[in-house]
Image 1: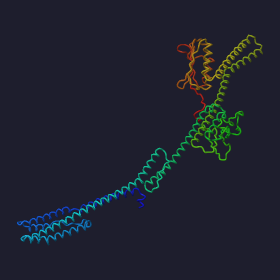
Image 2: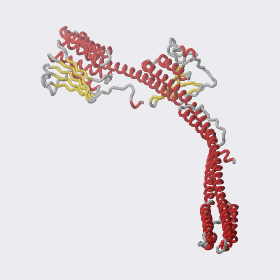
Image 3: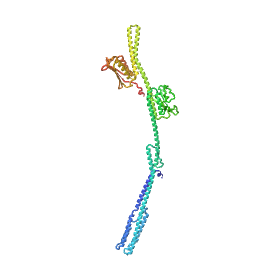
Image 4: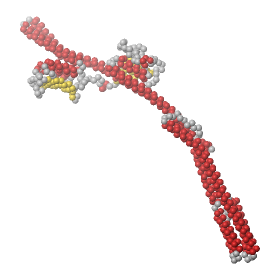
Length: 620
């Protein structure tokens, strides 16, 4: 009973079994009842034949020439051999009716043997009184046959009525079971299934607040409670996912704003020189507001003594110990109203710090100390690492730029010193020797004519020294006043075009920032020396200066259409040529001087630039 009460499948099976059992029982009983009526029609027909035979015997008695005894004997034989007996089916059904029918049949046979046969035998040769008596006996026999037929017909009719009653009973039971089953299935199956379908459509629309509220203990009830539990978990999971999505969206928005702040501050960071307070402090404070961190302390590492010096501290109540500008309030001030309204605790018992090294290559430039109350997530941690890397790159670049500027200044001074030594210092030494010579001549009282010659040498030396000084001033003014070699060459070409009286062609095809300052000065001086020789000796009407860079080689050519060299294979060792070759040797260049095929002279220089880079690859 518990299984039928708590199991929908068991009830459905029970309904099917009961309905099927009733249907089979009804069919079976119908078949049995139908079988129990078999033989009744044949028996009634046979009884009718016996009755007809009796009537014929009566008719034969009325005819004098007939032989009624023979007919009676034939009827007796037929009565004995006919299958008029009734039998009970399956030993139960129709037993009493069969006994009654068989008893009536026995009485019929007994009456026929005891009354009809003797009466007909006696009336065969007798008078009319015996014939009348035989006829009466035969009529009684016929009435007995009629009662037997009536009994047999009633038995058949009763069985047919019983069969109809059984059919009606079983049909009623089946209909009742169907109604009960339908009501039960409507209450226990159809309605819950419709509710489950509605819930499934609701769940498909991502609404998990609906519940079945099933209390039954059958399969549908268990399914509904399981679905309710699953919907509750899905609702909780969906809400958790929505919360996580909202948190991730907010985090991504914060990180996007933080990246935008870093991007917008990159120009100030990389172009701010050594002033980290003005370039980095506003960016750090804005990042604190966005990422909910802070304060942030920036310390630089001293590689000489291994100490860390605090350079910048956001939201600091006082200036850093190594502050270099007392007029700057970048560390102490705020950028916007949001920063002023937001309170960041300077000292908190629950605050923790995240120390991020600022590393460029194998060099540790400093540390970025980030205080926080809530531990930053992995994405925020990666963003802070990016910030530390960007600060390290900016600081490293500024340090390398300062070092390069110092090296460039040292190289420039070295170039000036060498130029002064190679030109003006030698001329002054020559003048000093001439002055000493003149003093000795005056001390010896030599004639004025000889002293005049020395004075002429002094005057020529002074003019040469003055000319060299002007050349050096012009060269250094060109190299220092304007950035790059191209403007200096253009000004040089313009200067010598005026001295020659015709424009000098200039071809310049060199990538920017290819040459070092030392190489630029030497190339400019070689060009000026070659053009000076053109002015002094060539008597030219056309000249060209070309500086090109092809296949990692720099080519410098100074050409003219003048008188050329007397000996192409062995040019004279003039003072200017010696200077040009010495300069070419200083920059690892090859210098050739030869006559052009069409006339004139060509000075050709070939070299591989060796310019220093601000950040070398091996240092990163």
